[in-house]
Image (cartoon, rainbow, N blue to C red):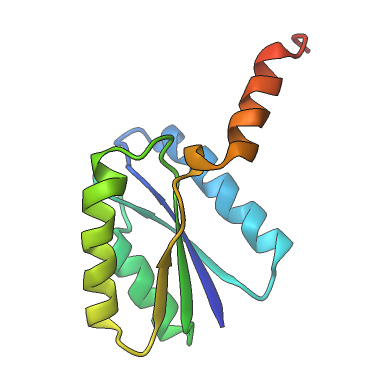
Length: 121
């Protein structure tokens, strides 16, 4: 069973979470069979280990972590890989895969360029 964790930095402002949750909702709509959760590095809940444990408890055996970071900064380069190792150690029977950061996907950067050049609605 596939699980996807949409992983972001986190913020104390509850409105900040809306786009993160929107990505998770769109994943769930595109694949109703996938279990989807949001997780945050800090400042709000759930954290990555909690979200992963919830998916594993549901029977998920393949977990993809989508980092919603624009670039490959310290969090994506150092913090997240360490968390991924910890997840694998905590759940040895589950496959965990860190996807590239959202900003590394040329489709996203092309979309942002398109949005910048479109006329205002």
